[in-house]
Length: 168
Image (cartoon, one colour):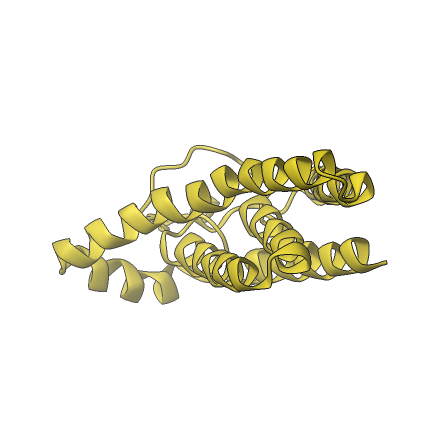
């Protein structure tokens, strides 16, 4: 996304303080919903395992997201794509000082793999988490901290590898 393309988004939000506040709230709330929801999933699976359920389910719910997170982090460090706001003339709506390591988005990757884990064991909650993960992707682009390709790649990798790992 070029600075000229993003300026339209920036101007729209800065002209609407309520929308800007909603974007900031979504940027704070959506990732926390997913990342605080993940230990809840592990707790539920642990409780089920203690009551005679599958310890393999719990192990898978730990191992798959961990492997995807570690692999995605290594990939983004290796590729080291710049962030949109590193371009001259690009002012993001969110304060962020990180340089590089934009692709794939780790927020999108983590949110998507957590949604896939929830989908495997508790589908109704999983669909809510998938919607929250999609919201994370949209917010990261609107806030100016990721390009669309960053969040698309993160979500595709996280969800794709999450589904493969959780169902195989």
